[in-house]
Amino acid sequence: MPQEQDVCPYCKGRGVKLVEIEVTGPDGKPLKRDASRPCICTLNTYVSSRHEWLTGVCDVTPEDCIEVGKKLEFSNYIFYGKEDKFLYVTKAFIVLHYHYNKTFRVLSGADVAQKYAMAQPDGVIPTVTALTDFSLVSLLCVARINNKAITPGSYEMVANRLRVKKPTWIYAPDEASLHKSVEYQSEGFSETLETLIDDFPLVDVDRWFKIPGYHELQQGKKTTKRQKANDSLANL
Ligand SMILES: [Zn+2]
Image 1 (cartoon, rainbow, N blue to C red):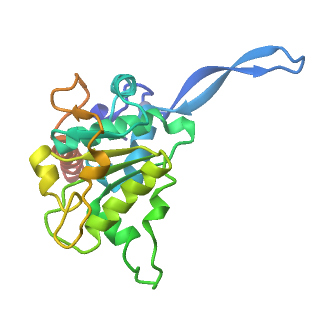
Image 2: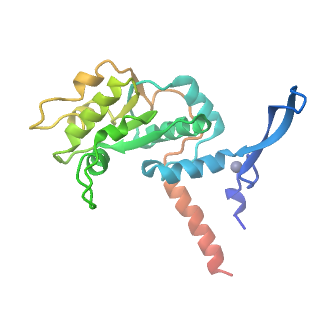
Image 3: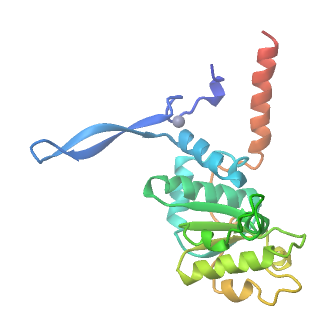
């Protein structure tokens, strides 16, 4: 049995919600009928399981998803502020667009280098062009240790996406951190992200707008919840 505080307030643990949809009836006239859709709790679990960076981020609320959807679109931005707040915004945006056949990636430059710009254990050498097709890519510019593939991999990914008009969200804690990150520039690579992103609008997630569902220490809270469940089992 789930602990009472873990039961989803939106679906009471069912995982789905009922909505009214319009279909075409046998006589060709519109007909209303009930249909089930995944609840926000199901979508949170689904999105967290598919995006490693979003796993420890707290669950997004339907209200925050709507708020994020009003402020942001499939467009280029540079984000500054707390990392997990940016990840919460990204998660809310992904959950909001779950039903619309969109594809997302959340990556650091190291992920780009390891997964898309370096030879894999099976000998296959992928290319960053694989990242061009996604509807939206969030690139976290947080690398401090140089690796030969991070700067050119990040540069090429953003350049390719700009060429085909696919949006990229660039994240760093602040401007100084962005400029210091290896995704942005490194010795031995003549290009910098600056030439590509200097006209991207800036969004400061800390000063931006209220997202009441965001809690910084959700990872810790989850652990506490899990601990409580374990303790109660141990006392049986
Ligand atoms: Zn639910």
